[in-house]
Image (cartoon, rainbow, N blue to C red):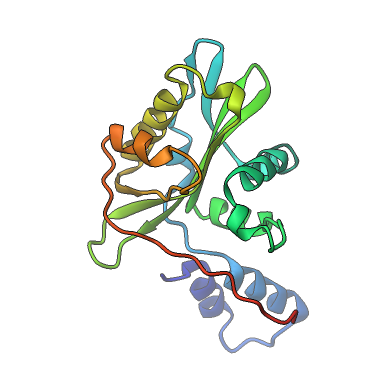
Length: 204
């Protein structure tokens, strides 16, 4: 993954004195991920209305405070195996990936109220060189789990991924709910098993 901005900055300033301003620019460029999906491509994903519910793409950068309670509810419901660890989302990292077109957040709202979200990391497979989406979070509040809402929301996400050229979606499901059966009905296949072990470590 080449950081073209960093290379261009170094090339232009090669042989020049390293000023504090240039050093700051280099640090910023070095921390920036190379863009995978241009922002204008993601902006082509149109919102959809399903009854009184709206599906759309939003930037986590703009709704961090609003989405944190939803992430907390998700954590409390499905992450019991990690409850000895702190709930401490790194929103700066989410934003960094989002700015690079490597993280897309889908939301489900009733009027203005946030009822659900699905976030996917995007990357290019080193094995096939095709785009892969990996689910980071998919959660709907209980009041939004009615009828075919979840089905329609996932279909919306899948169609958006097709629009971006993604050919594979990988998701994980927890054993504490019935999500695996739901995704099997949508055509997802059980292709591997994952195991987790929480290690006791010293605070560093």
